[in-house]
Length: 183
Image 1 (spheres, rainbow, N blue to C red):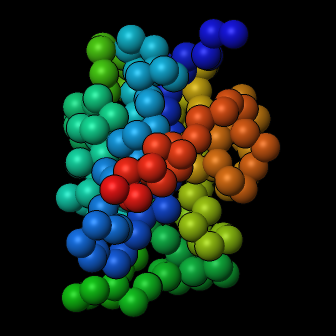
Image 2: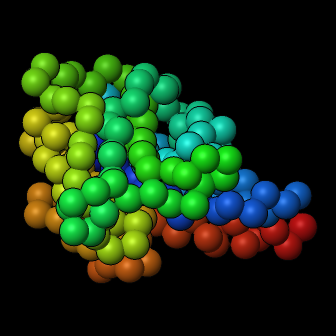
Image 3: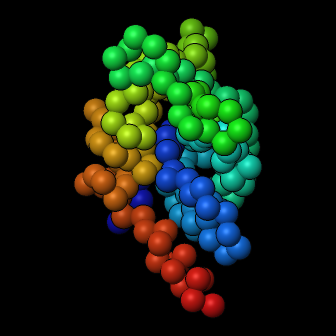
C-alpha cells in the first residue's frame, strides 16, 4: 500500500528542555521520522516552537529536508478569561508569545495574500495551539492534503499523527531512535 503524501505538514513537537549530552536534542528524536515518505514534492512545514528551542527547530527543519522561510504566526497568549495577557515563567524574561515557523521544500504556491501573522487568543488546554492557525494555513495554501504531527486532537479536514489521537498513518520514529540509543 502506497503512503499518502501531504502538501502541508503542521507540527508541534514535544520539545525537551533538558539539554544533556545524548538526550534532549530534537534532531536525535525527530530526524528519523522519514518525512520524505509523507511529503509531496512541493510541501510547506508549519512548526511550532518556543523561543528557547529555536536552535533545535532550525536543526529539525534541515533534518526533515525543508528550508526556513519566515515566521508564519506569532501567537500572543491571553489568559484563560481573555481579559489580560498570559505570562509564563520564561528563562530570562517572563514569556508570552509562541511562534510557528514556515519552511518549504519544492515550491508550494501561496493562494492568498490576506493571511496575517499575528494571532491573539486565550490559552486553552496545556500546549493546545489556537484553531485559528489551522484555518489560516488553509487560507494561505488552499484545501490541500494536510497532516498534523504530534497532534493532541483531530481537526476536520486534517489527518493526524501522534500518541494522543487515533493516527491517520503509521510512522514510528521511536523504533529507529531506540536502536541508536543502545549503541
